[in-house]
Image (cartoon, rainbow, N blue to C red; front, side):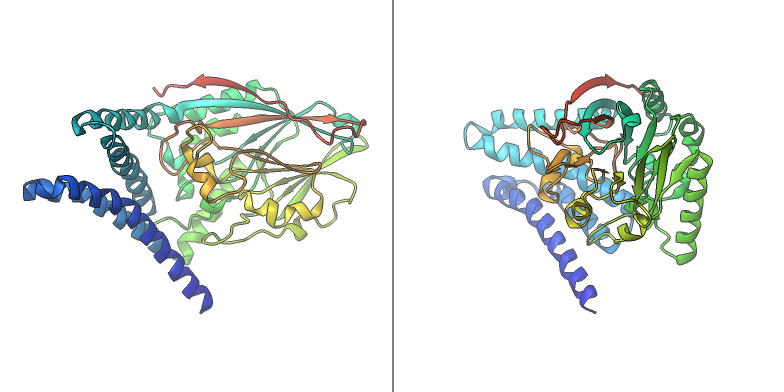
Length: 397
């Protein structure tokens, strides 16, 4: 009962928050002139704000997730944000000049919808540790996450370009940290042949994110959930991916080995926590070099740090899909939202991911990360990180 009450008040808080963010600018603009418009124009003016609130209600009720997400964020970007910009500039200049920066912001956001989600970045990180076996000195891993395959428009070749670029890096192993789909397992089917072409000598390992359990689909029946999850598991097997469902895999070369530990989605409210790190690490030697794959970066601070794991890889945040300088909306929900985070010799790397709940990226460009492991016997530095960025722009056919 307490969980139900907490969920209700949390949902109510989100709805009230979105409503306030939407209606406060409207109230100010009404005060300075919109209230004097003819009735038909006034009604048209109110429609976007009403749709934003209804979309948030739909999200909190778990209904029409895909359309609710797209309506909510599209209208925040193209209705609420331009209004806020107009209000700020209207204090400084006549209203007819204040319209120009508001229109410029809309054009900037439009770029994110049309081109930004295709602009792939490959980042390069070096992690050094004295605990790394000598054989694995120079070992390369590709980390990718949050493909959200249901997002991409039909006919887009972004996934194929991602596969080509990933293979071109020549890494020994690829690690995927969840959210392969948006709502349903069959979103993978058009891309199976492309994703089968991903290749790494020591394999491709994956964990599941919150979207992979297909709970955002319109059909919430138990049978539909089971069918979707079976299909997604089957498709990943068909692609040659090793799914780590609260388990670990030992990558061995001769007498040397490292441990890849994967947990199911380690969500915190409103997301379900399905992780069992203790089970996943059962049988792992205490002095082994350990890499944890987890979807939600909250898990690192909540539990993983205490285990002494060397390297943790996560996604989930999308870096907010919008980043202006150091500002991103992801920072409001996550202390660790993108890039590297340290605790002594332990490193958490949070990737901005490749897709999103809707096709938009601005500043927080889609990314993959190549991580090179280095053996460091000096103990002078627990780890060093070198980061470069290669920017490429991929066009859909």
